Length: 112
Image (cartoon, rainbow, N blue to C red; front, side):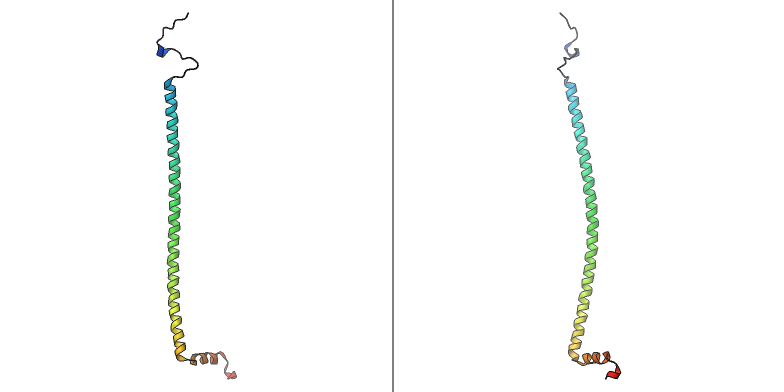
């Protein structure tokens, strides 16, 4: 018969037993690694969102410039349409005299 004089806490473990400190350390390590993983994932996600935001702001600036260009073109078109309506009114008031003038100047003098 063997007598073990060591206290219970210091005795070697059986092959099927695991110390609770090891399990606690393992859980702490896994928890730490998962926190690191979540932090890295959140950082990558934040960087991606920031890049998308910068890209969207650049695209929005381009679209604003295009809207300004379109508005300027529309203003020019409306001013040209106003000039056209003024010219049409002048032609309508004068009758056929301008049309005859255009027809006369389109031919050479020898054909008159």
